[in-house]
Image (tube, rainbow, N blue to C red; front, side, top):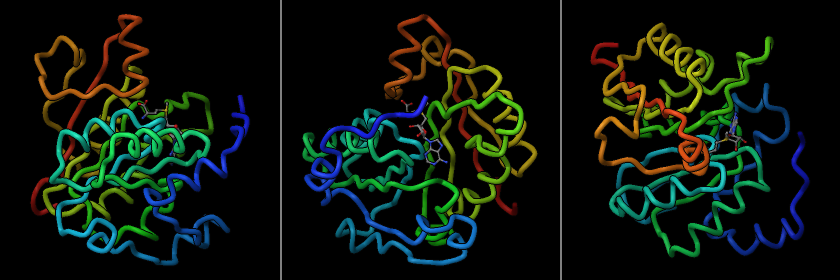
Length: 226
Ligand SMILES: C[S@@+](CC[C@H](N)C(=O)[O-])C[C@H]1O[C@@H](n2cnc3c(N)ncnc32)[C@H](O)[C@@H]1O
C-alpha cells in the first residue's frame, strides 16, 4: 500500500532542516548518479572528529534517537528513503535536543555518492522489509548488492548490527553475509531472552515483541586481511 503524503510535510521538513543533510544528485537517476560523488564532511557537520555510525531504513527514528542519547560521543547518520516517515524521526531527535544525529532522505543504493570509502564505524540495519516475493530479492537490504556497498563505506574493523523478526529474512542475511566475506558473532534467535543487556527497541520491535514473536539478531564484521 502506498503511503499518503503527510499533511504539511514540506513545512515540517523545513522545521527540522538543521538535522537534515541535504544532497540531491542521487534523486535524478539512480543508475547514473551513483557514480557521482558529493562526500559529506563529517567534521563540518558534527563539529568534531568522533566516529560515525549509520542506520539504514531508520523509520520513525526511535532506535537512532535512543542510541544517540546513550552514546553522546558517537556521531550518527540515519537514512530513510521515505520523507513522510523520516520527518517523524527528525522531529523526535529535535525534541530530544540531540547534537550527534543527522538524517538523510536517501536510498541505501546511493550511499557511496555521499559516504567516502572506509568512513563508517558501524552500520545498523533493523527490521528491513523482508520482500519475500519473487523478483524483489535484490531490494533486500542484506542482498550482496548492498553488502558490497557496506563493505566499501565501512572502516577497517567495522561492523554491521542487524535485527529482524522474520526467520526467513534472518537466514537469508546469514547466507548473504557469510558468502560475501563477513564473519558473524553474537548471533541470537531470541534476543529478548538471550541476556543481551544493551538492547534498544525499534518501533517494529516494540510491535512484534508485544505479539510475543522472537527477535533475531546478529553482528557481522570483516575479518582482517579480507
Ligand atoms: C520495516 S521498516 C523498519 C523501520 C525501523 N528500522 C524499525 O525497525 O522500526 C523498513 C524501513 O526501511 C526503509 N527502506 C527500505 N528500503 C530502503 C532503502 N533501499 N534505502 C533506505 N531505506 C529503505 C523503508 O522505507 C522502511 O521505513
